[in-house]
Image (tube, rainbow, N blue to C red; front, side):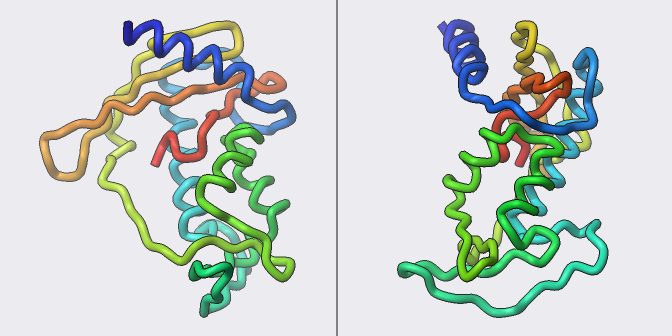
Length: 180
């Protein structure tokens, strides 16, 4: 039964991704390439959650927050400070559909011409740099990998499923928080 649910989820993701993207992973998606893309996606995800790409040069960040419809928000730094800049950065590793859904899920908004997010802190104990991957489903332009990821300094592991979609010849991940 689980196998059919995974297959159904992968098939449904085929119909929900959008075209038009750019990524660094082309050709055949091996487990090694999938893990490398997942590690890159993790950097992008946490940059989004912090509102700033730490590798960006000359980015300006503003202190302070503002209230919008009863929620405390903060602006993204200038490197990700507009929806267009944010989308371009995230689209290096995620499908456009994943980005659109992520913006909605995390309540990111444009306010007074700038991109903003609810004021919150977060983190993860998942050690993706020590993850092991296994291909569990594939079609021509879809791959579903299951990664076994160590959790902090415990002996526990987390099983994380990540869907990769081939868009214009390049592999992208179909959920911005698949690799958190």
